[in-house]
Structure formats: structure tokens, C-alpha cells
Length: 472
Image (cartoon, helix red, strand yellow):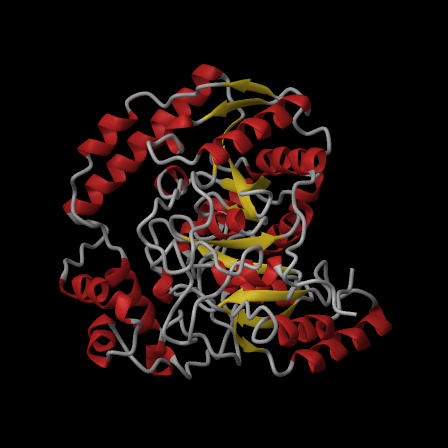
């Protein structure tokens, strides 16, 4: 598999700023053709450099990328060019991949709903419906991969932003167990929940990138737990019969609300039938007992979070970054007006460290939720839960009033357990994609990938967007 970087560049030229104007790319790697030629030369002498040899990758603009501007979507960091790669970028390069371009993102990764910032004028459009949103923070990566500007992409997910854009654009997105993948070199939003990982058009492609990026990293201490669960051969999970004998619980608490769209429910019910036909037993409902009371009781103040994490990240960059802390960012005014209030509130708010009462209370709360989820899985003998990734179709661009339907902010981010979004069909006359989340225990990625692959192969819901056809 040696996709041409030239094809990606031609498609970016035809479809990102021209034609449908997807507006997903912030900067194109000016050296990518030379880098591809060097990989070709090495291939002719010694074969493949690695499992991602010459694969063109779209990288979200919050991943430090050596030699390429990295801004976190903010004008405040225009011109910041890192001198080293984020851990995951380094890993894919070592595997032979090409960083084709950096993708647009919601500024500071704040918004799960739309992809707009101060570094690139305008919104990123959903290639399946150009008047619709991409679902937020990693929306640029999702739009670019969905439009086949690159083969695969890297995104980040604090509450939604790998799985949500994947759902809105008929992709597969993996949010790993906390500690299985490193966040080193990625601008933080909240390290208690931040995860970085792959987005792809197929489960196989996502699994192959995932294989490359997992592992322990001394620059991200949370990954010390990973060595107990590696190595894993994720390709072994690509089993068409992987759902046979699986017991899957329907997590209605994740998606049922008064504003849930009936079409999403119908598509999801059809997805459950597909799981059953593929050999799974469906437990409906699979209720996590005591959850509402736990959520009501969580009244502690913020634990670390954006201000705490960003200030430490910037301090570690030394003189490489133009602004050194959140206070300087607020004073600069170099950010999208939509974010001013949140930035100011964060800057003047408390900076509770890991030993603060707020963090101790937060840690206890997360542990209670984890225990409740596991108790339900044990009681019902579940291998995984499923639910619609969003309860509503993609909104119109600029609409922040109708129900958003985001179902991803709670279960995986609070517990640190893994979740994969996989295409489950379309709504609105077959035009707007919808995704299904498969969520399970910590370190259960091989099992979740097996279920996602078996479902994908049994249903083949994904189709390419009509707005970005093959270039002849």
C-alpha cells in the first residue's frame, strides 16, 4: 500500500480551497514530495521502511510537527514552528508515513460542535453536506480524511473530538484507554481526559495506525501503564466473525433525551439488528445503576484543567513559543472572539493542582463511575456497550441553538475506558452520516476493534461524499 502524495496534493488543490471549498487544511507540507521520493529511493534499495510506508497522513494542528507551523487553531501561535515532533507524529514517521498537511481545528480544541478558529478564515465544511458542521475540534482532520485528501489522520479527543467528527463524516475513530497512547507534544485541553489517536475510512486503516502509535512514552507519565498491556497485534482483531458470541449492552443512558432525533433512533435500531445478524446477543437496556445520583453529587471545583495544563505545556517550550502563558494570550487578543469569555474565565479561575481538594474529589468521582460501569458489565456479562455517537444529525453551519446531540462527553472521558465510533448509516434521505460508539473496559481495544471490524464488514455503510469525486 503506497498511496501517492501527489494524489493528495492534487485533491487538496481541487477540493479544499477550490471546488466545494472544504476548508480543512491549514498548511501543506512543502517538502512532502521530496520526502516521498526519498522513501521511494529507500524502498528500491531495502524495501518498505515500515508498515505505513508512504501513507499520506493529515495531522491536526495541535500536534507538534517538526518544521511545520503548529498553532492549536489560534492566531496567538501563528509562526510557531516546533523543532521536534509530538510522540505520535514521530511514531508514524518512523513507520514510513508522510505528514501531508496540518488540519483545521476548533481553536484551543474548545468546541465539540463546529470547526472554526482565528488562524484560518471560515468554517470547515462537512463534505457530505457542505452546509453542515464537522462536529468540532478534530473536524478538519475528519473532513480531509472523508474527502480522501489523505489516507488517514491524527486527531485528539477530550470529550468528543475524535469520535464526534468521525460520526458526522462516516469515519472510524479510536479513543484509547487512558495511558495506552501518549499525548506528549500535543497542545493540552485537559490532561485528565485528553487522548490522541487515529481517524480513518476503514477499521483496518485505523487499526494499523493505532498499532504504530500505542506505547509507553517517558514524556507522558500516564503511559507507564501501557507496558503491562503491550505488545498487541491489533491486526489479529480484524475478524469478520468477531461478533459471534459477543454480548452487547445498549447504553440508553448515553443517548436518550427529549431532543433525540427519531431518525437516529431508527438507524441505531437497524444497527442493533445488524449486530444480532452477525452473531451478537443484545442486552437492552443495560443500565448503569446509581449514575444519576453520582452525577448530581459531583460538585467539586475544577481539577487542573486548561489553565493548569496549558501554562505548564508552554513553560516547557521555553523560548520557542511566542506567548508563555494564558495571561499573555488573553492580553494579546489573538484568538477567535467566540472564545474570549472562556479564556478570560480560565485565566482568572483557580489553578488547582493534583493534590488539591478539588482534584481529590474529582479522582474519587471518576473511580465511582468506573466501578459502576464495571459492575454493570459484570452483572450482565457484557463484552461492550453500544449507543449512537450523536443523538442528532449534523447541524447547519452557524447553528448553535438546535439540539447538538453529542453523546461522547461522559462515559469514556470520565472513566478513561476506550471507545470506537464506526459508521452505522445515514439520515435525512441518506445524506447525513451517523455513527455508533462501541465502548468497553480498560485495555479492551482488541475486543472493540474485533466488534467494529465485524460490524463494518457485515454492513459496509460508508460511502464517499459526492462533493469530492475521484480526480481523473
